[in-house]
Image (cartoon, rainbow, N blue to C red):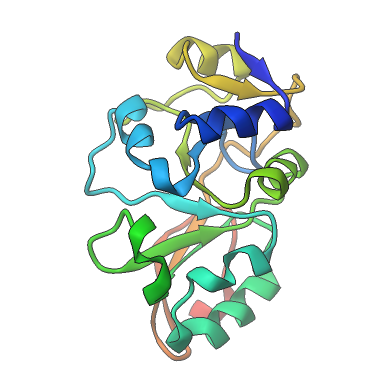
Length: 193
């Protein structure tokens, strides 16, 4: 098992390789935004499926949000983050180089996980996906993940704090004050009802 701390995780990420780390929902595989292709390779993920940009705090992600959606983004984010909510929002024109979607949107999330937040305070925001081979359920244990991804470094220390094992809720912004549910998860967003 290739365990690393936050400092060595940053070196790995800067070299273009991903890191696996614990979150409040499912373990994640993440990379620096400019190396997004590596996640698709390791996961054998369909390139039509976008990645999620995770950060350690709201101000780390605000520059990725298009001006038209900033007010709604800040309102929802302040109520539900950190937590198991992914917000799909129009991307800022300045940030389109990191997009993995075809519709100029970006999924954003701040996990309620000390480990994940500590990592991203050092590295900055990371493009992420669940740490599993696409099409397979995947493990939520460090040993199982290490078996699935033997060459990917894993953020320690272990054992990890227990996560929920349930995917995040995903909501998408349509227009001012108008959100729609994409995937039901562990967070109930009152603004949808």
